Length: 91
Image (spheres, rainbow, N blue to C red):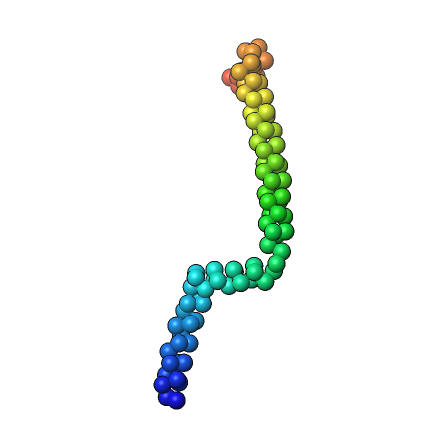
């Protein structure tokens, strides 16, 4: 009886250390996913979300690229007569 009590007292801290580690967290996550049963549906939703976000970011990058080209063209095609006068004139 004393042996069982000693074994139980020693196993409780060891078990708590293992369950709080990365391995314990990975096991818990795996058990949760197994219990859901909708893993494929969840993965499909996440993939669809990532695809839509990728498309949105791609269009945003295209817009920024077009804006950059426009500003570059404005700066390179600027004529000297369109420049503002310098502030050296006396009033």
